[in-house]
Image (cartoon, rainbow, N blue to C red; front, side, top):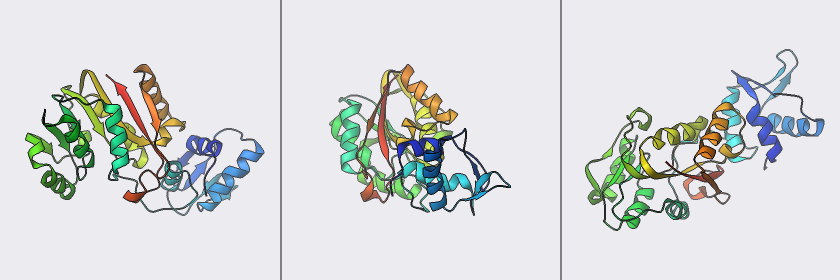
Amino acid sequence: MLVEQDVMTALSAAETQGNCLRLVGQLERKLYLSVNKVLEAAGGKWSAKAKAHVFDGDAADVIEPILLTGTYQRTKQDFGQFDSPPEVVAALMALAGIQPGMKVYEPSAGIGNIVEGVVGELKGGATVFANEIDPKRLTVCRERFFNAFGAGGLTCRDFLSIDPAPVFDRVVMNPPFAKQADISHVLHAAQFLKAGGRLVSVMSAGVTFRQDGRTKRFREFLTERAGEIQALPANAFRESGTSVNTVIVAFDQ
């Protein structure tokens, strides 16, 4: 069942410690009952002694899928990297404004679905650069687009461990979402843009409503750059095996 936006906001502000979740502030009774319903559906039980909802496992791990999908259902998905469907790739390309001759980077390429879109936009006018942490997925990407990558143009590393150099005209990406990894990836990726460059990324819809410090600082970061957030349709990643709610974020350096 879908979770109302005000409930999502209250859950995003909650504090978790181990298997305990504590709501922040005094919620109106109607809202509290709605929040409690979601927490109980997710396996949480109110403990007067702990003054918190207590779960069998880590509370943060239970709440994260709810914030990502906007549903009650429990899931064991880790909400890592999901391949970008054609419709999502098309939306990314529409916002990226890639022109032949540009230097373009995809820092979490997967099997190369976004790379395919970039190659089509470049029309052979430049070399594509990409990175993928999973060797098996990287091999698939290389086999699909062998001629698109120049020397050293496709690497197999943890993207967050790569020292940034501001050399790219465009960064187009679909980072992992688990535990707000998308924010970390986008902020790191921004450092790879040259002046006047543009970054376009799929992100969890949580960046629009979560109230934790990291998300608030990210929204400030976007505002400073006159960035935009475009909602993707519900279940945009269904064919990739996830119901996570997503948006596209775009900003210029």
